[in-house]
Length: 254
Image 1 (cartoon, rainbow, N blue to C red):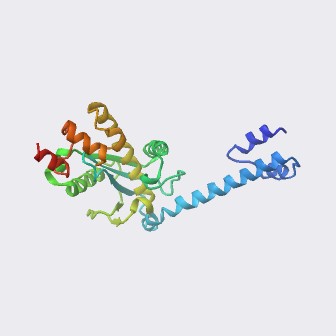
Image 2: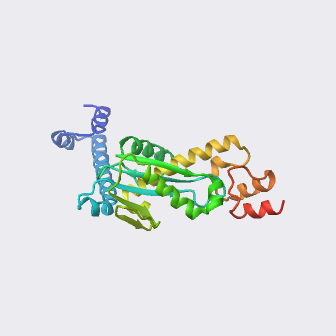
Image 3: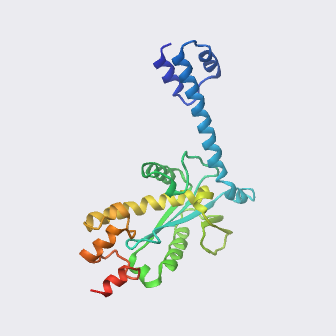
């Protein structure tokens, strides 16, 4: 068997034990390196499965009570000077696994896209709600975030039996667990953070095409030096939050 054939064999999802035993007896240095690399990958994969499974600890408090439909809720976009605040609610199938599932801020953009696709396709249910800047200005960002969270839960195609939310005081007819840093501690909240982040990023990339010169595709509406300078030079757009500083002061000084 050539080294390339061994490499191809070890890339398969399930390698028979007898094959691994036989490869262990292969005297070639290259074969030994491939086998050691294979076992290191298995160790990494097992560690990742254990890490993701640990993120179901909060969900499991409900699973053990017979509640299988647990919705995770998270938001993205509370702090930017422009664009909506976006909330996602996601009900994962119990102990659903995806390598890399984590707080969206800890996931690369490319992997976020792939995870968001899988979550949308494989979750028991998901919903996305965005509250526009004009409504944020009218009712404030805190109330806008609460509104989006309640609407996201209401528009799920499946009624949740319990809810885990990232550090917001939601109330409802089902048990609600509010958890600080929930997107790093709960698989369901992490999934919601990823879906919300990918959705809002795409919106901001579209706004970048509609309103060139502000850099929305790059900073996603956050108050970077480039963004603030663009506001001073070009003025505000319909997606800017007029109640947020320094936007409010820039408007007032014109």
